[in-house]
Amino acid sequence: MSVGDEVRTEQDRPQQSLGTAAARNLATTTKSVPQMQEISSRWLLRMLPWVDVQGGTYRVNRRLTYAVGDGRITFVQTGDRVEVIPAELGELPALRGYEDTDVLSELAQRCRQREIAAGQVIASFGNQSEDVYLLAHGRAEKVGTGPYGDDQVLGVLADGAYFGEQALLDPDAIWDYTVRADTTCTVLVLSRHDFEQVAERADSLRAHLRQLRSIPGQRTNKYGEKEVDLAVGHSGEPDIPHTFVDYEASPREYELSIAQTVLRIHTRVADLYNQPMNQTEQQLRLTVEALKERQEHELVNNRDFGLLHNCEYDQRIQPHDGAPSPDDMDELLSRRRGTKLFLAHPRAIAAFGRELNRRGLVPETIDMGGNRIPTWRGVPVFPCNKIPVTEARTSSIIALRTGEEDQGVIGLRAKGIPDEIEPSLSVRFMGINEQAIVKYLVTAYYSAAVLVPDAVGVLENVEVGRWY
Image (cartoon, rainbow, N blue to C red; front, top):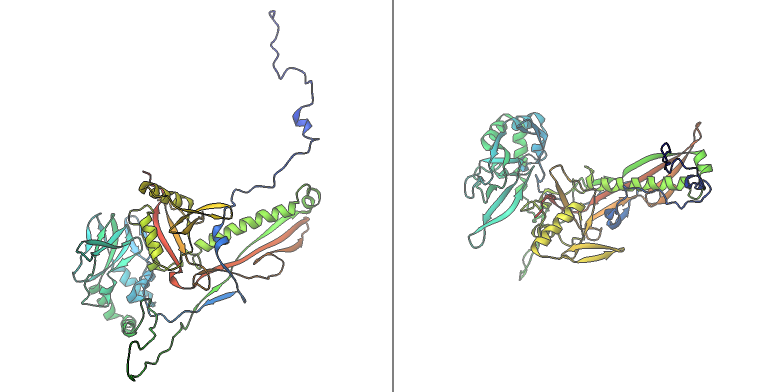
């Protein structure tokens, strides 16, 4: 190559054949339908038995229950100062149903904040119970004496729990277990002395306590329901007891919730760009998928009917060591008969799998519609990414008994609504506006009902970020 000759690159050479970009203008491409990353397996919607609701409301009739005070307490934090929300004191057995906000506010102001170091004993077995403790943050263990004299963990307490509540009603109450801080704990303490001082000045509180003290006189079963009087093992001609089964006077009613959106499609798109795929059908398909994802999210997280918020406090348990272990899953199973399924975030399932690997256990799997689903004690563990994972990398595992016949959890829907494309899901044509845009109203009606309290249980605050 002589001096002055230029090196000709590929771009400098003249084009000798048709380019691929131009060729594609005459070629027919193979296309996929529009893809959507949000779509999940939605096992809850698939496994929940659905009941058609007439009139948009489902009423759950139960036997009359005399149990009082069975909830969780909420706090607010300002810096290092923690305060209980006054209305939340109504979760205590002594204050259930009491609504005088001024008195509750005074009681909340009398709660003293204490910081408890890990391993410190908060209350000791056999001592007189003079205070009620509200656990704002941390984890504590209830420890009792086993049948052979050794310590036995009776339960694990976490944020929002309370203990020592018997001190407010019984001046002779004693601790029948020991409470020991498992981690650093922040507790609020309300003494019986302060409670009685407020009651002396508040007529409404004294009247409430008088009415409440009549409740223990009712004969109830272990679930708090009015006991059915029976004569058993008698001989001769004794008087047979008379009885009846009482019902709740104001049973809970579940109204169907709604999810809606208006889908808009320009007529030019619907007229000219429908080959090889119908644009309207694809727009509706993706919109319905998003609607179903939201529906499952609401069934898990809605504060009115969601599973996480409608689980009774005595059906909530805490892991003994943070990560979800086989022991914790067994404890969750033992709280109810006939558990049909577990629901857990995929990260919680992975954390449980690590615990199984650490113990050398291999879970069985079952085939569900071509998917291999892990099981524990024969109960399938379904993934559900709608169960939240907190910033502290903790989540929950839900156990369900389902179906009306088993007094379990059921889904609610309104089958047969106008312009229905699926049960309880409709697409209605809303017309064409001045901009030539076609509008469709997409609507889904749904809810969930827990027929009896032990139909749903939750293993809370399981750590999903622990590695071995």
